[in-house]
Amino acid sequence: MADNFRVIFAGLADNVDIKTACTNLAAKLKTSDEKVALFFKGKPLFAPSDKDKALKQAKLLASLGIKSKLQAVSNAIQNSSPAAANNNQRDERIFDALDYITSSLIRLEEKLDELEQRLPEAQLKAPDESIDEWQGDDLMLDDDLAPPKKRSNLLLYSLIATATILLVVLAVFLIFPDLFSF
Image 1: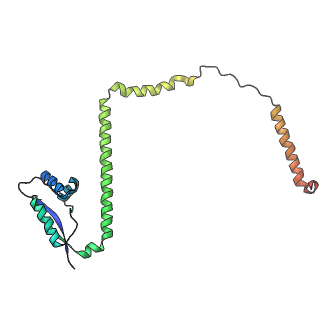
Image 2: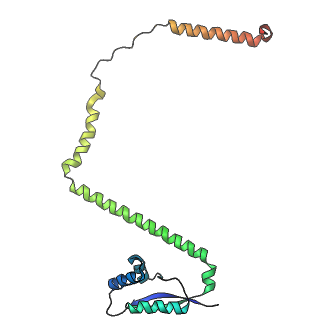
Image 3: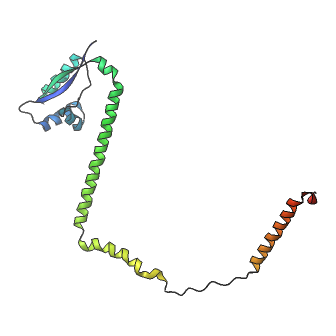
């Protein structure tokens, strides 16, 4: 069973600052500055690989003034926990998304506070006054309402009579079914 190695950040050379190293490494690897910054915080930048490739990666980092060390990662652990690694990656993405949402909400709240401070007090009070104005209109009942016109009850009485006749016919039909045999 051959062991794989991972390159871990150990420090910077004396004459190299972190911003320069981050920019140079991102340009050299053609990756984002964020990934390189995470490497400086302890996250792995390269996937576990054999010892020769890991030494080449460490040599590349040393040429940019970045000190690194090799960490052994066994194949048994690597092969037995891809599901755990996927869960960890998923959890990290969720936490990153939650962090992004939280920071966005904080920025929005700060912007709202700035806008409230910029508005003069007269404009802040004006919307309240305009809201109250419509309530003082007494629902616009200045016009006299005409009483409803009286309708003729003839139509109502004829509908009641028709319904009563139909109910009587239905009752007779149900009581004496043999009477209406066609």
